[in-house]
Amino acid sequence: MTPLRSIPTGRTATLAEISGPRTFRRRLLELGLLPGTRVQLLRRSEMHNLVELSARGCHLTLRHSEAKYLLVDLDS
Image (cartoon, rainbow, N blue to C red; front, side, top):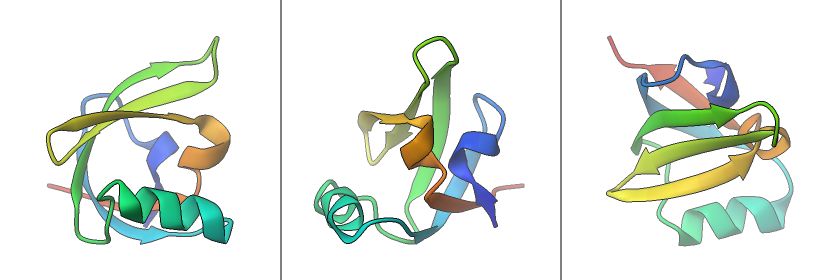
C-alpha cells in the first residue's frame, strides 16, 4: 500500500485504507470514499500543498497532510 500523495499524477489506484483522525475518516466516507473505490490523482500543487483527485465522478482536493492518510493499491 502506498499513500495517495506518493503516486504519479494521472495514475489510477484503488483505495485500500483510510487512516487519520476520526472526523477526517468520517467526512471522506460521507463523500463516498470507501475502501475499494477507484481514484485517480489528477493534479498536484506543490506551491499550495494540494492534491486533486477524481473518485466516483467527483473531483476532490485534499492537503498533502491529509492525502497521506489515504492508502492505495496501484492498478496495473
